[in-house]
Length: 162
Image (tube, rainbow, N blue to C red):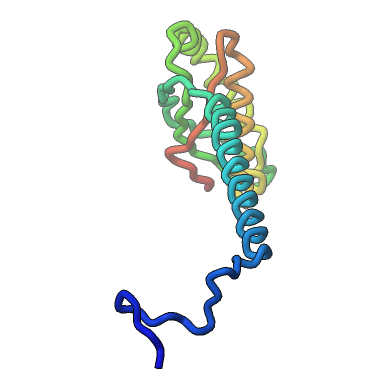
């Protein structure tokens, strides 16, 4: 019969002189090294690259929307009377010098819009990419006149071809 000491039965399979296998220690040490390396790599990434990404963020100045009104132009189609009706809004940065320049040149910018639009045919203003292309052309027209800054965007409140 097995002898009971301190309320526990001795384990028959356990040898008190036997040490843990060395393979387990090596495996644990290897996993610990891998874990530390992964944590170091993650810390480096978040501290270095995240800081660089934050520095690259450029804060744009606020913009002001300038309503250019509604323009109605005859299109350059040879047959029939076709026209394009647009309501245009131009976004410019809220910089006093640029706003003053824009206000002084608004009549020239509006005339540039009319000249650009009169050269278009109905097919050119009705196509799938026509609105984006026309928006780009009108933005270039605005910025061609400005010397103290650049307009940011052109938007259409109304766009009708007839």
